[in-house]
Length: 359
Image 1 (cartoon, rainbow, N blue to C red):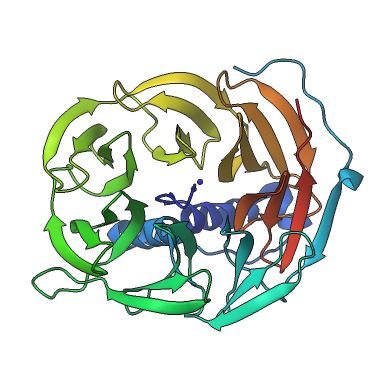
Image 2 (image 1 turned 180 degrees about the vertical axis):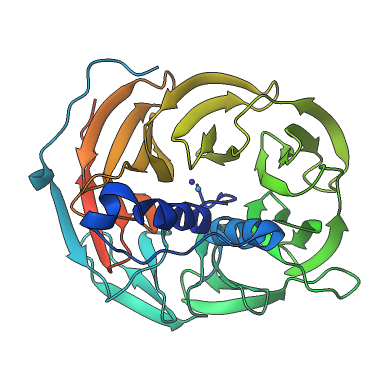
């Protein structure tokens, strides 16, 4: 899950929600009782899920036998705060949210806190359009933050041109406009004027499962298994194809790599958005909590009901599994690539650091 793509881009709350339910049964119940967000019902659920992930870009994204598994001792860790929400890397810093309402700017080398800003509690964060973004979910407001000055330069109400509050489920960036996806359709945000100025309601057969700008188009995955291609400036429809992806699939793009995945089943695939074809697939036998693209690899955080979670390294071109690294923690709120390392943020306030070995 991107960039801060639409986060990437429906990712965080849905992942954490399903994980909590799964962990309450079987081995996980005996091993750990980490509180996690439960899935919400019906439309509200998907909307909030999407918001947490998509707003991930907001405020201040066939296995082979050759699998190397480094020891746990190869993972270092440090503590940021008593609890920790999302993190994002950008502008030479790492941005981390304390769920109590603080956005922390961290030095990626020393881990020192360089600055802090009050933000809404439990806010998602993301990077895009030259800014750090955070979202006030309760009041439907986006905060745009200058990463150099560390202050808020714009507060953008998520309201339709008619004045109705828009419940966003995701945010994706184009050159001139960003698009928030929600139960009422797509809300366009003018990045030059910092205002929401257009509502587009494409025929989706129900809720929007994902939306992402890629290769000059706005791609929308509809509930009825259609992938719509829209104009990224106007929202006008350019085309539509039927996809045969899993019913719980979502789609996002990180560093130019389109990925389709199902959080609950552990299915992940690289896709060609123009044709809807899966170029490769992997079944990871667990819950996918987060994924990110680093160079020519896709790193995936997986929970399989054991005493420790792990991250899996996949070749972005072939899907071949290259490595599997056991982590000292259960659960994650986000992952980010930082100076040749993979930072895995945990609900307990720690960041597990996995060194990315060259290949």
